[in-house]
Length: 103
Image 1: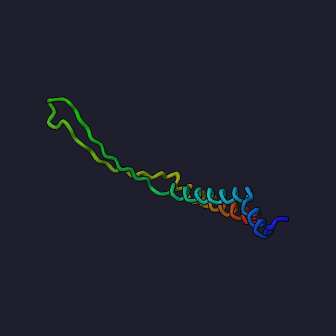
Image 2: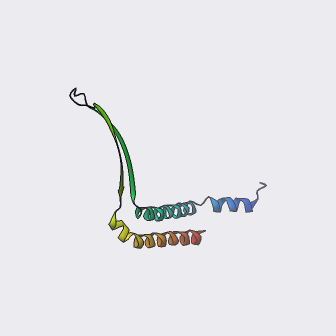
Image 3: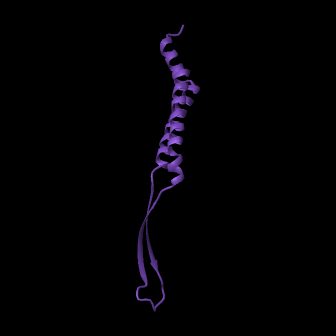
C-alpha cells in the first residue's frame, strides 16, 4: 500500500487544472488590454537624432546633424477612449468572475 497524503494530491490536482491556468492567463491578458487602452489616450513622443554627410567640396559644412522632437495625439482615440476603457474594464471584471467561478 502507498503512503500518500490525499489532501496534498487533491491540492496539487486543483492547482494543475489547465482551465484554471487558462483563466489566469485571460485575467492577465484583459488587464494588459485595459492598460493598453488607457495608454492609447496619451500623446505620443518621438525623439530623433541624425547625422548627415555630403562629399560635395563646394559646401561650407560637409557634415551636419539634426535633432528633433515630435509630439502626436490621436484625437479619435481621445474621443473614443473613455468608452473603450469602460469596455476593457468590464472585460477584465468578467474574466475575473469567470476565473473565480471555475476555481
